[in-house]
Image (cartoon, rainbow, N blue to C red; front, side, top):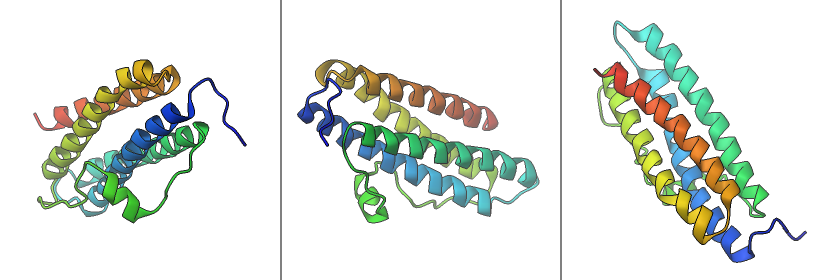
Length: 157
């Protein structure tokens, strides 16, 4: 069935393709957060383990809403990990120590990378592709990532 939401098919395709990259980044961040949750060690284990659980639960929600936004624009979503690894800006590998500081630094870097990717798309979605809805949607996601980045940064002080 045709998607008639006031945005041209070409613009919806371009926006959906950018959202697919964002989805891939979010999915890699989710798996890295799970990895940190499972493997963190140290005297602060319990509080870090609980905090990381909160983070990966929030990531799971973000993954779902990004995928649903792609569907709202009339495109399908690949749940194939191979496809996501081709699209992501992030590295799925973590080479650091299994400490809260090591994981927090890695996750902070990934959140900041996602923030920059989102920030680079807001005006483009709004102006060039006439999709203020998705521009607003990703602005909200960016704000969530900014808050998480602040929290992670505060743990590292």
